[in-house]
Image (cartoon, rainbow, N blue to C red):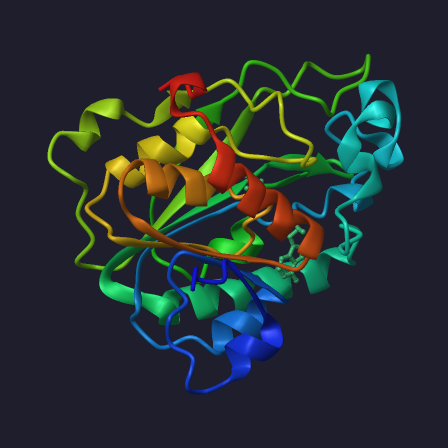
Length: 261
Ligand SMILES: C[S@@+](CC[C@H](N)C(=O)[O-])C[C@H]1O[C@@H](n2cnc3c(N)ncnc32)[C@H](O)[C@@H]1O
């Protein structure tokens, strides 16, 4: 019988269940991660919800205005409103990082993608989230454009990827030639409101020798597709069944030739 690709949280909770690999798990990421064994993952790549809807700056006055009013993210995510009080959001993200660190092997790393922004005149550089973790390097992902702008702001075109690495983590041979500013066009043809571009994730995975890659905020399954292209294993978690189904659909039907790498 074909392996079931989407598992529910109830199925994951079953203590006899250990085969998470190459599956999407539909559930709350903290609960799901807490049910997974210590030191079982080589690499984590993820982009959490950014809590964008409580923003008052960086071109998103009150979360509205300019092109933002037409952006799909204006509606938050299916199942997650993306508008938490900032201190609660920071605490949640720290708890997620604690779990990710527990799941990582001692030569593993987390590539944690986020966005800096100015809020009420103060730069939020995500120090509130990552300062307790071993950030080894910051990679700038330069996009070809942005959606969250209005006439009072220069178009924001970058995001930040924190490389949070355990002591024994090493890059694959020659990977350091990529430098720390990476240019990748954002994904255009994807119904998910905030997808990664596949080539960006492929760059991260092939810069390591990781075999098992986890994305605890999997969305439309980009990390799974990049892992499969590179013959690595993935585990994907998302709260939304609709996004898990979208991810399964993309994973089973992507056309390798159409992915520019
Ligand atoms: C920025 S998106 C990730 C997009 C993904 N990188 C992709 O390429 O499609 C964040 C995702 O987190 C999911 N999410 C929000 N809250 C969650 C939670 N508590 N547990 C699991 N997933 C959650 C949302 O459904 C959304 O798909």
